[in-house]
Image (cartoon, rainbow, N blue to C red; front, side, top):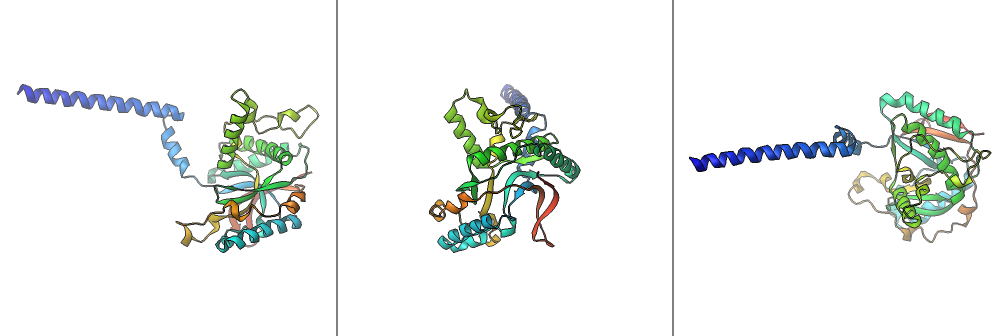
Length: 294
């Protein structure tokens, strides 16, 4: 009897300790996530997919579009299956923000766009040029911006991000941006905190409107965004390739002659807020809002 009673007492004590530790660890993890429902929220956000974006359209620049088409043909000549990855000629654009907008957020997202555009119009606008071909994880081939153009576009992005973020609209980054941020941090050292801010503060002065003010909703992940023009992406491939999508390796584009692409200049004349679905009437993305630039 004493043995049985001892075993029962042990099991009761063990069960109590396990429940107590589970309770503590659960609330500790919730606190680390920022709220009692943090884990549940984070789990849901992992399943969120982009459905809207903000961009500078480029289809009006015929010479630039022709260069992008040449890049596509060059890559396809190395691996024919990648023809299916080509972006349509009327859809080339400089990506600024990639978003997930809920139905309940549509009106506030339009407000965010127009509020940001009111500030963007105050910037000193400049021509944009390109100088590299790179990929995101060998899945997306894109044209990268020259450094001066990149700083200008990052100032535009900073204003857009601030406006959308303060309305709790989900903003996506990309891995290339995170890699760049880590590289900058290693290069500059832990003491250089300015690397985390995408705005070029060194050029800021009271009379220079091209230097956007720091956003009121600063985030550590601002450098996740890499301004770029998508030229090809393997998500365009038919579903039959879903488990074995061919990748876009550097060997396919490294020998492309970039001289003409580097000489092209784009003067932005408008910024668009678009839904990712294609409008069957125009074969372009569905336009939610757009605003001209001075």
